[in-house]
Length: 430
Image (tube, rainbow, N blue to C red):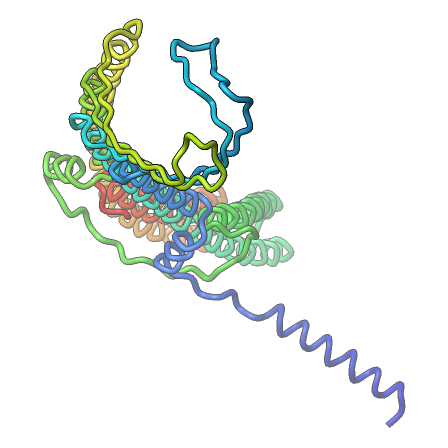
């Protein structure tokens, strides 16, 4: 076999492989798969989880006051005989030449509950941060659901546009043949071509909408690049509740952002108690021991001491009272923010509940509209074929059918997107 023959076969093989790759259908993607991908790799979810882990460390920071503090010391001093510090303080200690090593331990005995209140404050704040992670997850899932159903809607509109182009192309071909035979006028042919051009414009717009919808879907899933998928239809589920007060109660009970605001308000109240405890005394025990291998003759080789220290705040320019007042006002702010959020949640849930019920009714009405538009188109086509009507009547019927099918697709997927929004508003999406 010649080299030219081998080259020809290689080029043919590569071309066949490229054609097969181009004809490979896009992978299937269900709504559940899209949600799992988003939760696994979305930067917002990862950042929220890191924030929750950081908040957990503040609890350990506050608990550290319960444990003793140990530190070692190595001290070397050289001083002339009879050296004393005579300025800079009220005491007059002697300084001896020495080199010593030792360990000092300090243990808080009681601060009248301030440390305990601080620990509970940080625990409540950390729990609120965990609820914030759930809120971020729910927000990401809502974005994915909306983008998924929007992509399904865009694909459905593209199918309608393609079917419209095909149907109107058939009409153009028929009218063109009849016009050449003198059975139809050139005006009919012009109308048919205009309708075909409008359908082609609709198809171009729909193709762009599909690309944009998949770009939004990939971003919602946290993907750095845009991929096209074969989306799987989701079952159309009717509204689950006929009473708005029931879904409002579910939202106030289950929504993570409401739970977070409640925990923040509780933490603020605990912090008020912690700031009030600043005005109470603190009792601490201190002990130290060590060895002095090089020392002045008046010093012993070993040393140790233990004692306690009581700190009683007397006056600090009103600092502690101001801090307590600040904490009280911030606790009031947190409680009012919680109440405001609950009011807004009740409003948003009611709005979402109404939109879901209205959207479900639109689905049923658009289904009826499509049936009626198709029947009208069949009658218009028959009348036109029999010469009983003009091309204008047929064109209007085609337009009505296209608009009805687009409205049907939009109503279906908008209802599903609104159902996802209602799940988010009631705290079921997480």
